[in-house]
Image (cartoon, rainbow, N blue to C red):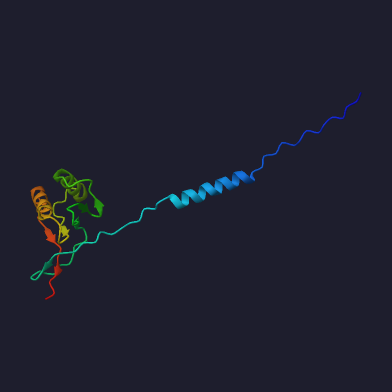
Amino acid sequence: MQFKRQKQAEIDVNLTPLIDVVFLLLIFFMVSTSFIKETHLSINLPKAANGQEQVQELAALEVIIDSNGFYRVDGRSLVDTDSETLESALRNLASGDLTTPITITSDATAPYQSVVKVIDIAGAMGFSKMNITTQPDKE
C-alpha cells in the first residue's frame, strides 16, 4: 500500500500578539514613570530698612536656608543639618580659598539657629567675607 505522505505544516511564529504585548508594556511604563522635575526653592526673604545693595561677586558660595532649617550649598541639598555636613560642603566647594565670599540667603521664617550655625562655621573655618540677603522694607 502506498500512503500519501501528509504535508507537515510550516512552523510559523505569529509576532502580532508579541508586538501587542510589548506596546502595552511600553505604554504602561510610560504612564507609570514619574519624571524628576527640578523645583526651585521659594524663599520669603526678611526685610531690612537700612540695607545696602551690593553687587554679587562671581565666585561667591551661596548657602540657602529654607523655612524648615535645611541647607542648600550652591544649589545642592545637604543630607542633614549637622555642623559637620555643612562644614564639609563649604570646605569642598571653597577648595581651600578662604577669601571666597559666602552669601547667606535665609527664609524669613527659618530658625535663627540655622543662620547662626552657618555664620559660626564659616567664621571658624576662616572665611572673612559674609553677606546676608534681604529685601528692602517697603513702608
